[in-house]
Image (cartoon, rainbow over all chains, first blue to last red; front, side, top):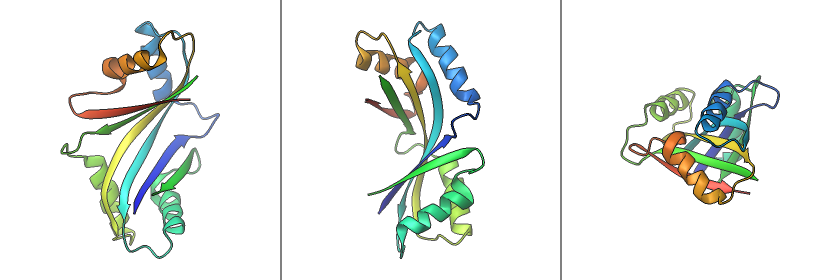
Length: 77
Length: 77
């Protein structure tokens, strides 16, 4: 079973990496780019899980996301 | 128009961040986790683009991805 976890900074938390990308894109001539947010995606195979959704949620809460400033979304396929 | 760019290391390129996450998850008791890959996602609003798909591709090639070691996938919505 393939799991995907998307982690983004919560709205309102300053995304400095996003700001840097935005300014770089403006500098390259793409002035129409706005509201850039940079997140990370963690993909992996999950085997022998009794309750994959619950385990995935626990992984996010414990390790994959900093829930103080980040939100996450999980996908199972 | 909202654009999403997913950037991952190409298969065969060592993903040290993925390895670190994998070992950490094993250490927390999730031994069934395998083949962890960590990528990044860049989301932004794109305005006034004549040909959004072509511009997005150019952005990836020039700035968002290092195409020597990374592959990318774009989504427009």
